[in-house]
Amino acid sequence: TLKESPSRKVVVDGEVTRSGVFPVTSRTTLMEAIAQAGGFNQVADQTKVFVYRTADGRKYVANYDVSQVREGKIVNPALYGGDVVVVFSSTTRIAWQNVKDFAGVARNVVGGALIK
Image: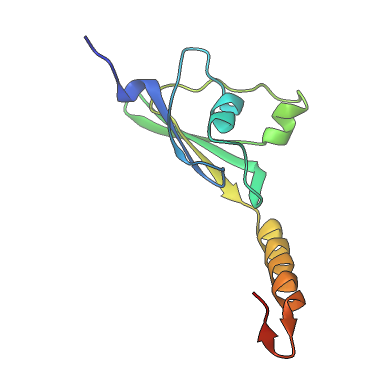
């Protein structure tokens, strides 16, 4: 018997908590796959979630704005085995995270020495 098939899995990569390969059913949606990956991390851009798919020998890509899915403005798309979901980063969120990280380091510097 066939226990595992690559066609019954999706890859979730990019700015999620846990990138990985996850099982799908005939009812798995984009939001469910992101939830399986632990959700978005701190620098994720919810407007830049891409789904890559190969069907009938052709490659397709679709960009989804997950904030619009959450608001019910667009449909939560179904995923199919073999799909690849990539969550891109927000340059604004990266810059803000860098500022916060720098401020934290600067706060710990006393008299030119880093406090551990």
